[in-house]
Amino acid sequence: MIFRALLYISIASAAAAQPAKPIKPGEWSQITLKESPPPSDGAQLKARMHASEIPGPYDVTRETFSVLVPKGYRKDTPYGLFVWVSPSANAGIPKEWEQVLADKKMIFIGAHNSGNPRDVFDRMRMAVDANHNLRGMYNIDDRRVYVSGFSGGSRVASMLGVCYADMFTGAACFMGVNFYEPVLGDDKMMYQARYIPDDEILDIAKKESRFVFITGEKDFNLADTKAVYEAAVKGGFKAVDFVNVPKQGHQPPAAEWLKKALDYLDTGKAEAKAGGLPPKKP
Image (cartoon, rainbow, N blue to C red):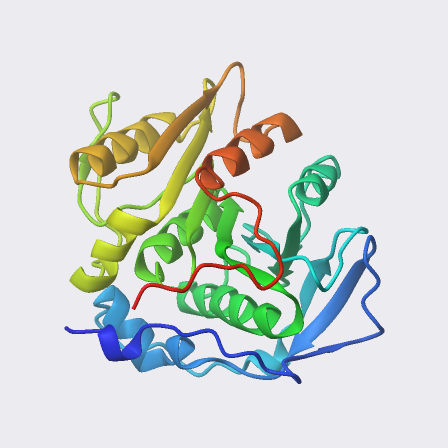
């Protein structure tokens, strides 16, 4: 299927979100979003993943999101966007990660009630909608729009990083990753394909996006994650990294590993200046 006419083009929306109270940089806020972009449409999501059925009804205006804008945010400086997919109903991240995001000039947004029990299509659409709406609210550096998550949320993030490579320029996957081909782990387990991406979007992911897969020596997803990394390298992804945290189990790692992941995703992307962003590729 040819997606060129459907590829995402960021269009700022002045009324994209409605915070319960004014968002104050440096403090957590809850917001609702007012619109879903075309890539969030059920039919397009079905096509992007070659799903067997059209995703069910979904209304972003009924969802809530947590947002954290770094204290030093200024409208004249482009910031990165960090879209989080949680494995639980809580959208939070480890407290020590907040300073890393601030230092890296990253705005955080994560959906509530987007945990593992939630329909996977809804979880993907909430991340897509968060991406779109935050671009309308803040000065976002289009080259630094990343999706991330932990465990089951990370598996969703890994699919978004590929199937929505026109919206996300990178993915940081912590302790969980899905792939579009079966992979054989060092544990002799065969891990099945979880989705089938559109060829044109997949080509963008391979050539233009950056991925980092973070696991740990004691993480039960170690073999799976390593096998996916090796398959991605063999499959032609230009920028993919594998991080095995020493003595780490199945928990979010210390802040230093988030920094390492973001440093990798930021490779080749010098800090953008106001009015000085490079044009998007056609």
